Length: 171
Image (cartoon, rainbow, N blue to C red; front, side, top):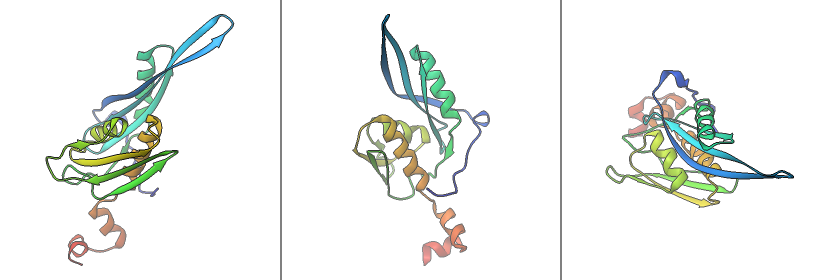
């Protein structure tokens, strides 16, 4: 992962939330079963800022609230170029592998469950995405954010190479 990750303070921006998954966990004791819930939540501002978090509690609403608070602590900036991603990118986390490709305007978000939540919260309008390997939502969300963080827009590439932006396009 590159070292150009830019952390964002959640107090500065308006965020929306998207619950990706809720799991019920049972703990068996001699008094019976104790149920608790874990929720994975993705938050974003729809303009390139996205984060994810995990919350655990005895009730679903509390788990979601804890997940949102956790997600606000992990906000990052991802590059968006005319409503899509700058280039094709692959990433993996655990057993989950993801492929993200730019798409023509009007295509929409072509992605499954957990990936769709991350891409929509980031504000990406047109993208082709495929999740391979494990479908575990936790790992798919982490792999998707990892892929988005590895992307670089043309301005960043030109700055890194120390050349003008038009020279990057014209060779």
